Length: 398
Image 1: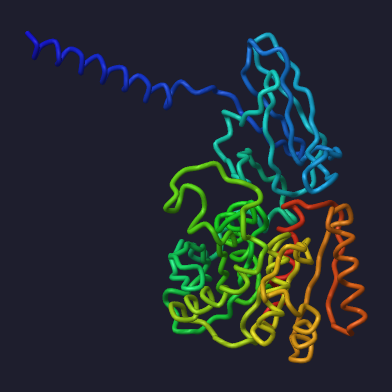
Image 2: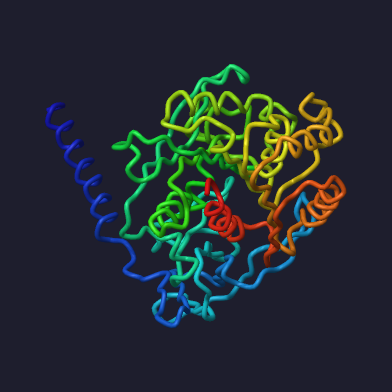
């Protein structure tokens, strides 16, 4: 009797599980969202028959000013959807320029992703949907019918930090079949990011595949480390397990990362086919990664021939007492005297770090330190940083 009851219970349970699986397969909403039209307008839809209000927010809308811990910044706009008699809410955008865009819905005040769009990206602790419109600049962000490189996650020993750590590394098309040695770009993320940021939000693999295929960039290895020195890996990928990512993490800008950076170089040059000299090393980063780029490259002033500061933070906090920051001007002068091929600075006109970068350029001018400067529209946003990578990479190792 007990055996029959158990079998009955298991049968009911399995039927229920199978029904849930089939619901996932066949019961999803048959709604297209986003729908990208031929005229580059985009329609967003969501089924929410009981909702009172639905909005869409994203970087395809006009920006609004918002207060943040870093001061006033540009934030994504918001638009209201309209509801039809079937309970489907919709909104159609204006014509959009070619670009990768992100968005979310706000249903009765609750921010949520689009259930009809499976393409998601995490930025710090926020998850948003993404879509790509048009060709032009956006074509560099698409997977095209070109030879593809390889993206791997590797663990390396960091004696300077006392742990094994994870990084993301891109090797160019044909690397595995080649005996050739390749140059290396070290590409650093911003505050709140990790070794997943540039490969996901920055579309690094797609950009490099396309630039290399077009003959606009030399085949190169791109190393994307984790700049948060108290982490061994991105949240969910390391020893700490799954936890909510944070924007500002202790010890990220106190000199520890800069002081231990050669652990990363040693791992790459020991395990990959690289040209291990200054002429074939580049380093670049966004925001905090631009800060790290500036200070790593001058602290090791004869290590890199190419530097890229994308919307960079510049000076350390007053409580940062590491020896890395003990002689900033002196090491910059040594870096200048040693010579380099490119010191590239880029920032948006409304970036909250604009004034700090203006002051830094004035100092470099006073020193006679050569650099190239690019000023774009917009603020402290991934749209700019992807563009900067597409502009910076073709200038390397030529």
